[in-house]
Amino acid sequence: MALDGIEQRRFSRSAMRAELLDAETELRLAYAWRDERDEAALHRLITAYMRLAISMASKFRHYGAPMNDLIQEAGLGLMKAADKFDPDRGVRFSTYAVWWIKASIQDYVMRNWSMVRTGSTSSQKSLFFNMRRVQAQLLREAQGTGEELDGHQLRQRIAQSIGVPLADVEMMQGRLAGSDLSLNAVQSHDEDGREWIETIEDDATQAADRVEVSHDRETLRSWLAKAMMALSERERYVVTERKLREEARTLESLGDELGLSKERIRQIEAAAFAKMRKNLEGQSREVQTLLA
Image (cartoon, rainbow, N blue to C red; front, side, top):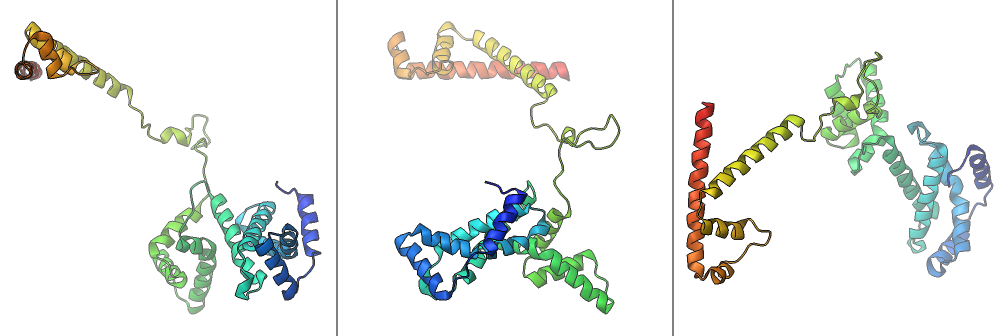
């Protein structure tokens, strides 16, 4: 549940008054949770280091996320750290927890920076949280030496300084340059100004295309009907049963019904298709002649 302003301050004050654990007590609590799943030990361990989580959350306030949410994400990272901590490694829990807390906060900030995913790879994450700082530093250094850097040179140095591909720098710079824009925002302040959503191409079939497709379908249906009428009654029946039913009849079943062999039915079918093909080609040439 989200914290309101009063609850946040109360929570922060409570966390700052929590006990400070020495290494021996910390180790004992960690073992109790790992080996015995002692929830009281887990609660005491987390409560003792919640001040650390709050302190780290405060460092990300300038990214525009509510402090309440940052604290909650920091707390989630702290709980993950407690669950995965191995006291046998000889590392203090606070040292281990820092990574999990920071990772949890950073993931939250990046998820909520924009509706468009800001980045997922390690290089993109490094850029998101370091690019502006490195850029400012490079510009100060260039100014100190009297050097003028164009945009491309600056991006190249950022990539070299952080150790990421130039393409990632260019991508991240574009994503950090502006905020999300509503598609319902008006393009101008005039009363007749269009919303941005009106400029997006409609992927649906347009009316003219639907009319054209419908006309072509009707024309083809008419041609097929004429081609069928040019067949003998037996040929029409074989084609209908073999190609126009939902479940096509087999050559054998038609042969049994008409008192013919499977091979004879196949020959009738082939002859009917040849007649239809010739008829359709004739109708097509007739239409082309009329349009010429």
